[in-house]
Length: 589
Image (cartoon, rainbow, N blue to C red; front, side, top):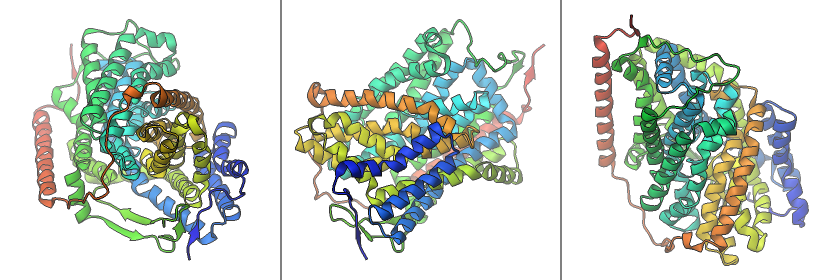
């Protein structure tokens, strides 16, 4: 049995849109006004969307249930798999006592909360987004900031907002790769177009972040730091996206901004150290000094993590891991059972890439780190059990959110909302980023939003005489500012930031910033479409006759062998540097 999606069930697009918007408006109401817990709002929104899908759109009950189940499965793997492993790695460092050394090290660089936010939430988070993505950056950086003593709400909130800058190039550029595949525009011109708009936001984001947590005047006090952080990040993001492609902008920009800011802090310090009003004054004991070996040992879990996520992002390694450890199956009763409005059947294949998943890379980093930081594997197992208990409600929330995302997509509800935006004529470039924003809000993924709407962006731009690369790129950049309010992202940040049950507080913290940034991107896109056409790159469409090359397994195994050598070398270095040193601080008389 085949069921065909309906875009305008009432044959009145205005009425259809009003009904289609109900589940999304409910989420805003539930989290902002009613202040519901995340899992409650997500479950109720899923029920509302299901009722509309069945009664209004005519979706068979069986397909609606299967669609929700498919989404929930995806929520459990790979999303929850990644979140659990990220929090597990952090909890290991806390259990071992090594995080106390990390806190001391960060405080020795700066105990100023404003500068710590720039280093960890903005720069390090961007680096992680470029390598892992899919929630890992927010999960790891929010947990680190809370561990350093940040107010949990501010820690999670600014990590979500900081994640705006790198999302477009996350996971080694996967969002742009998908936009290219769906639209037919080559990756490089999309990367260039994104890299000629997004750096404007990246430039001001550090100042914006600090203003949120400390106020405008306190942000001005560290103007040299925010300028160095934002300008270095924006420059490296622009350069790499325009000349190297979409794979490395986040990695290069994240590392570049960390290095530039740390160099600045060697020669400049703020006149006053700012901390939250309700926290005690800095308690750095200057009589305590840790050896280089002790510091290396404390940071070793995150060094191993960085090495692993970089390796797991390399295509040869992905290919060989998928050849060894991936299973996939067609979702029974759902695969090819839904026919899109354009006549194509929707493939519903569930992939369990248990070896190449980013969560697996983090798990291996944890297993390698356990003996390095002085724990036994029995203790590690105890920490893992405690982590699962800690995240039981976030796991439920994420599964419910993805079930909601899949039902609104499969039923056609999302397409109804998109049709209205596509009918705005010459003003479409202004509203094009809203499609990306909407897609990421619903799915939690810029990659998924690009898969949903890139073809629509391309076709609509062509129909109004605008270069399609402008609107396809705007789908990517609009999506990045929807990430901070996506229920999936909120659930991940709440889990990592110890805000379980307070998702509504986090949503209200970020929602106004999402709208502000969205409006800015809308105006940038409108200007690029009609006024600043010199920003549009010259390109040729992809050839449909291109053939795929089979992966080179020997190359992947060579990379894995190199990874093993690096990890062995790091382990040996840590052990040698700490062997003759007691893992306690040195007290100076």
